[in-house]
Image 1 (spheres, one colour):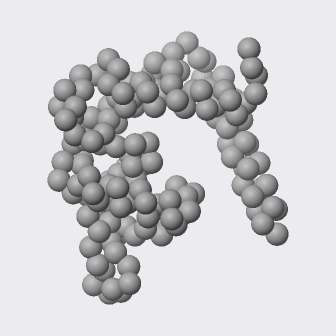
Image 2 (cartoon, rainbow, N blue to C red; image 1 turned 30 degrees about the vertical axis):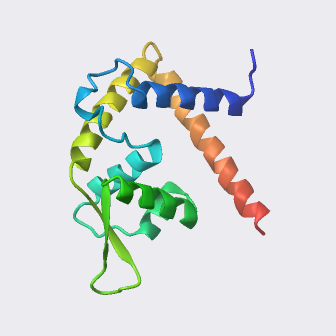
Length: 156
């Protein structure tokens, strides 16, 4: 068995993604089968917009929160706009930037997928003690910090 951390994380990520977005029987998926199902990054963007619905959300906010590059976020937003998940509207105060708002049935799609994510969270953490989960979360955070330190040091 390959114990390389990166491979294990990648494998788990792929398994989770397949379970949520490829129509496995976590939950009845009939309501959205004919629609484009959002990707993980799109779901994170939708979640951020929903949580900040009383605020104006711009691409730069998403770049910072998701820790993604400008071109990546721009491409994801373009795809989301094409799939009628969001609208980008010109800001009344600064015409150089566009506010990002949810479009159409995006909230409904998000809610259905969010329920699947919550159910899968219970499935993958089954029989794992709170102490082990706390340790796991600390290790993940340390790994993220290590990457951030490396990236900062590498750019100097």
